Image (cartoon, rainbow, N blue to C red; front, top):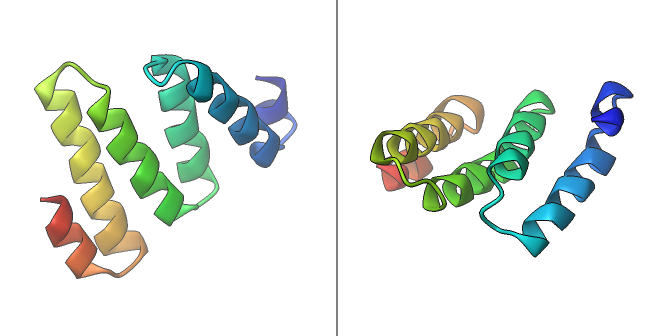
Length: 88
């Protein structure tokens, strides 16, 4: 969106969060939030967003992929092996 192109990640996150408050299953908003948080290096928030997206996916393979990504963020980005283990 416009906020993302201008580099206004905080505004974009706020807008996508508003969409999710209206419809927690909105796949576009869930995907956009994960992408924005990853691009901004907001790892703790990314882990939460990945968990939430996994909870709203119908495909078990996609759910697992999100949880693996959350475990990797814990381990590789936050240096928290305990968190990575908990995700498994």
